[in-house]
Image (cartoon, rainbow, N blue to C red; front, side, top):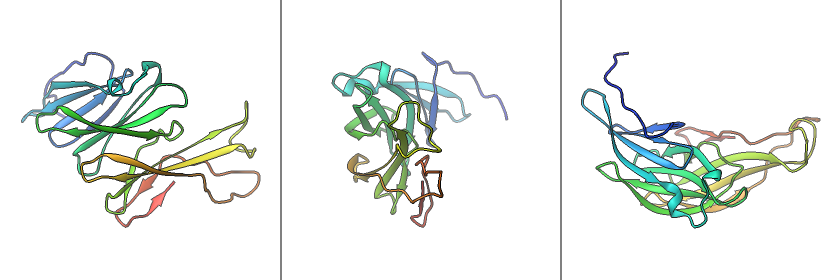
Length: 193
């Protein structure tokens, strides 16, 4: 590695995503920072977008410092919430200067804070997760686990439209259960959850 410079950020950044032109970071208050990548690889802050301002009733208490790009590197996504159970998946178009254009928000499932995986040639996006409905329960030995596999339609402008949630998982060998985790996909339209 060769040191090409140092760039500070206004606050601590918890997650990064990158295209060939920009590096995006998000803090714990739903601020998305856009850094341009110079010819030497040095970074320069060019835009800041508060994703929470697009959701009425947003609270930084329900900020999740995760961002993700679509497979084309043209759109970026993040989750913001107004309560423990009321969440939104926001879509932003990446402009040529690094500014983010808000495209809209869809239903966001708070138990699916995994990375989004694009399938069927990028036509759909999948997020997955699981949670337990019993106080003090174990994910290994009880039947109170709920799996959420959420499907979004990837619109031509990059916006993700919520389409469905599935709770179906295969039956595991007793006393174990399957718990949906971070999904993985390949170019042949296979999805592992």
